[in-house]
Amino acid sequence: MTPIRAVLLDFHSTLVDQGDATEWLAAGMAFSGAHLDPADREAIIARLDDIWVHARVVDPDSRRDHSAEAHASVFHDVMRGHVDDELRQALYDVMLDMWWAYDDAAPLLDALRERGVRTAVLSNVGVDIRPVMQRYGLRADAVILSCEVGAVKPQRGIFQAALDALDARPAETLMVGDAWKDDGGAAALGIRTLILPRTRGRIHGLDAVLRLVD
Image (cartoon, rainbow, N blue to C red):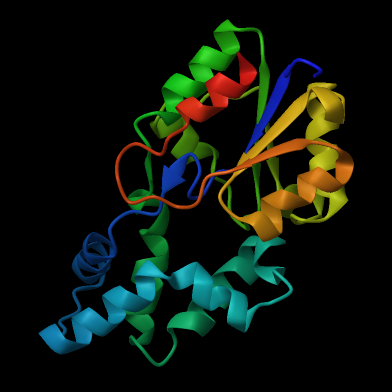
């Protein structure tokens, strides 16, 4: 097998978790000054926890991942009717503040760098995730965002953009993500692909990447 010299990593649910939905709602309520009945809170928390699952129904073509405006619009479409306008905006405003990195995310990126393996964060997203990366010390050689390159996973274009950024060949590259439909698109280019579905704990099992590299 060709040695792995480059690793592409999905961001959401691979390097970072979107956070606890209860805390997300509490932050939004504090930001907006909203008050909710306990029964209403439970329903909203459940929807926030699966917010991007619901987004796939509202936005099957992933237009949310092409621009900040579309990203916000889809979020509001998913939450409209569940919270009022002010709280809905507050929830969106604090969203990225809720995201936290898995405890094994930064160590993985550092370990790959020590091994001479180049890395790229490759994300379907309509907003800039670099501030979140900086907050948690997630250092990669390249950041490839769908909203900046005009292609979304599983389209070939976004994977090719990452390969070009790292000057890497598919055969020497590994893709790591949580969604087989999106991240599995790397296999069409001949990129070995590891799928680690979303976890709820602080550790995501990213040590599996180093075992493959080594």
